Image 1 (cartoon, one colour):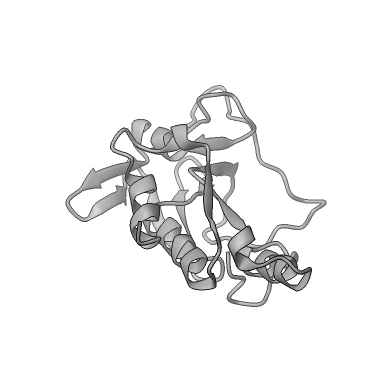
Image 2: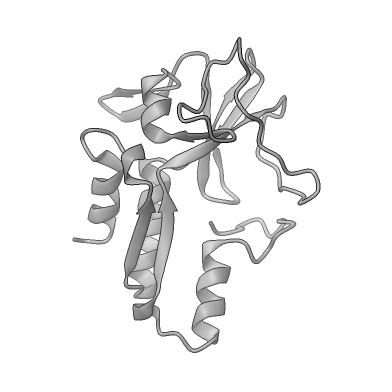
Length: 173
């Protein structure tokens, strides 16, 4: 979201740059909404950290037929909802919130302000948004005076609406 490390190969592809571009084009903050996801992407990867994408090398892999620990339930190219991460056991809820499970380890990418899960056994990496990262995005919206957010797709949230509630609380609604 923030390109906090200044090392992105797509430095304009983040929420701050988009907000600034629209604002500089004459749009008032109150006319803008920020799109936020309730999903992430599953990638086959041996990496243990997020790295910037190069357009030519960027690809998300469709789920493999066997041996997959987490897969996209709807058959999209490696896209997986937060709900599916919980359902398939990569995340589990405890009294502190959602923690990694099922052979996955949760990590935080300080450059983009997003979590990711890593499974060495399955050689999978899942970048996604959770309660913490969505709260940060909603606070950015509130602090800039933007009109609000558009979550896509709401069906990726939990039955308890935990992602939605985190966003609402951060927006002080």
